[in-house]
Image 1: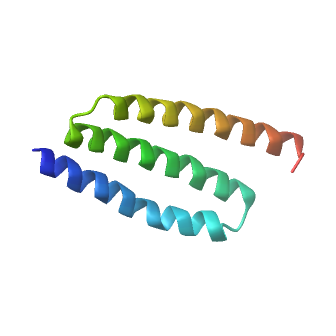
Image 2 (image 1 turned 90 degrees about the horizontal axis):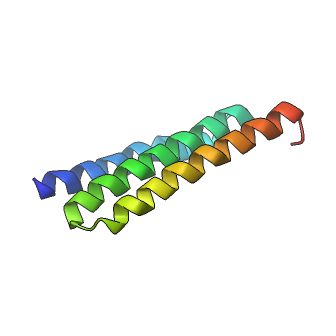
Length: 86
């Protein structure tokens, strides 16, 4: 079961590859903001599955912090776009 969790964690990182391409190329700033938000979700899921594989609960805390700050970062980014400060 633990090996399956490791394979899922690696799969989540592989899903992130097209998101990195979208982040680099993205035709608009909004597309890049969505890519960053999706990348952070993929990183959080990967950390959670790796925490299960490794049997370490500290990685769950890191995943929760990553999810929290990525959500706040997306909100700040959207606020800046709304005010057209970029």
